[in-house]
Length: 123
Image (tube, rainbow, N blue to C red; front, side):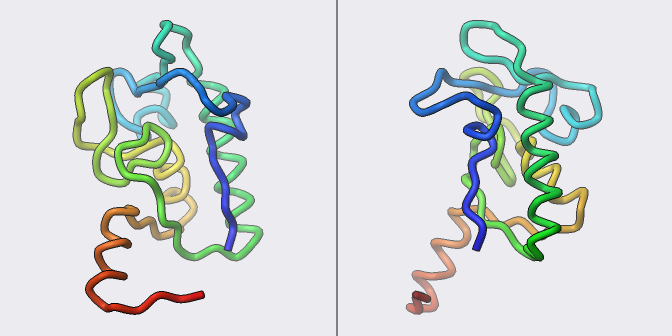
């Protein structure tokens, strides 16, 4: 298991101001067609993109085959992300980076549901 937070790796700290993807989703950010902004308006696209790309490469080197990511996060959303106060369809930047290198991604919400349905928990 490899536990990582792209926003922390990007130097944003905890707690941190809210961030969101403007004009697209994570795949658009990696393709230079959208940007990531902090609630104060600062553009943090490059910082977050670099962190996500670094972590995706690390995951490949560590043999990761699947990632469970936090839904609705601008970094880790699998199906939905925030664009300002609006929740929109799309994936986060880290999700897009992992998909680019062939790593399967699963939403934490879907993973939690699967664990509850099966009744099994691994240690």
